[in-house]
Length: 127
Image: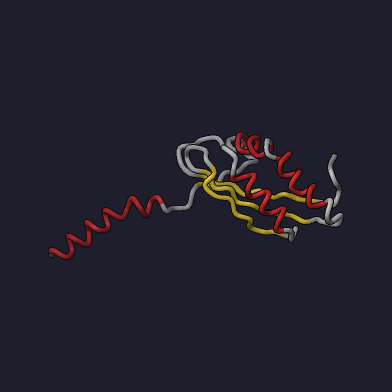
């Protein structure tokens, strides 16, 4: 009986830790409630475009897409940025974009959240 009680106490102590490890809620940045995250992302587009344009000067045919996942803690701080699907094939551009998004501050929420977005790049330099 004593072992059962100790086991139950151990499970009860771990339950909050397991709850924190749950997957954060996904934000649909195209929805009305996700609009403020999309606006925050839009404010980074100049930096993101510069990442691509700098590489385009070295490779005029550079094109492709990059899917990234941005994890945000409840306070609005970037908890992580992951490149998910990269057909661009340029590690420098990917690193530059990941770093730019990691430095951002996002709208705060009641719990950690994440969103995924797709950047599409065509070999047309911007001015």
